[in-house]
Image 1 (spheres, each protein chain N blue to C red):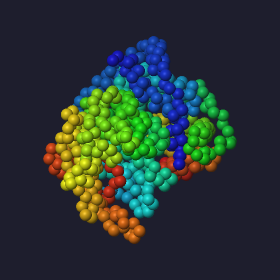
Image 2: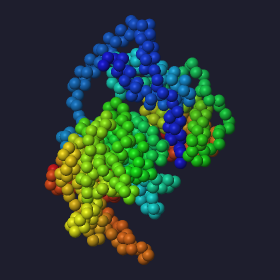
Image 3: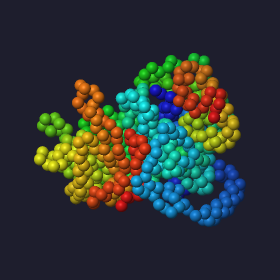
Length: 429
Length: 178
């Protein structure tokens, strides 16, 4: 349902282009300067003196990184319990500090509907929870239709998300200002993937529209955003996002072909640079479970662009494989087109495994959500599909070389979607 | 990069955002261009002192809003005030969106400039009462009262507007304006 804010934002989209305003403003300023040269010179002198005083006073104040505490320690070290409150106040435009995480939960805890409305929040490093009320989310009117995330920048200074009207924005948490980056249609934002590079400069965004896995057609208006300049690069041709590296070329998405039986399959993952040019490819044979069909494969590229971590189900050709049917976490060496490491995780008799890649803490540590969901007998006698019960889940740091896991975060109540600021987490090593 | 190039780059990066603010304030493309040009001329004249893009944007916004509130050249927005608002939108098609834009545009044109500036700052730019007061150079009490009066006026204009306003009523209790 459209509201006042949306209506005004929609009206704003009718604004004319900026055109030659910069040149006209410079001309106007020069004319004004010539008319008032003497007062301006006096003002310049005063300003220069003021600037000097300001500089001296700034030098006297020790520089403090607001995102770290005084000792420079990460805000989360190991096995920290985070309480998720039932309610949270609306995110103000005042400085709220850095966000450790963004998450979505059911707006009303006991909502019995199949697709309960979702509410997006952030938690700042002082453990305060704030509601991001202008982020798109599923509602009663539009159940399950919008599943686009609020994603925290690596050091928690910004969040990126899409508004219900399709405007993709970056909100600066310390200044309260909002940069509007791009406008999608409402249909395109149904399933949006947003990833920050580890250095916080780049964002890659892929709206998958109604086609969740996006392999049938190139996704519309996939963007690479340079947040230094707010320039955007259209990378729609390359499919679906696996994240973005700091500076090196990175594997992006799916390049598909169709088999003789008409089944879409993956041939390669294009490797593209930050100008949106394809400079290589990763063989799809390296994907988890050696799948040539891609449903369910998700992944994230490492900060240096050298490794792609991907999750999928191991449906290899050999059914006597002891890991057949297990969840595979595969680390693909992008430059050398080979599998560097691979780990398998099995469901237990009465639990389902939950494994989700959250991002990279650094080039050697992957952050994952890992846990088990209890399975119960379905109360409906007509339905023998297991009934999903309690969820036990935590965020762990996973060492790429060894597969060793270090618990980082547990939750009092489990978020439906989660984004973390990796720069505020210890590596767990 | 010399000073002028830095200013040109600032306008290239942030100009569109500022133009959107100018447009929702004035409701007219030509007036929006004029208003933004005046604000940018002030920024260009002080660029040597402003230097950083963040400060430039803050300065440009302040200039934009204050110039708009005090603008003497334009007596009224271009929209013709009307007692009867367009029919409410029933679906999300283009025609309905166009009608809605007309509805909101005409409704905003019914307000005084200060009221319109307060609403745009509060509910388009998501500024707090305190930030709005600081940017407009008035008291927080003035911001609250102007917000309350503006919303009451919009509610009186028609049921379609009352419906649109329901998302901000939680922030601004009727008659409260806080």
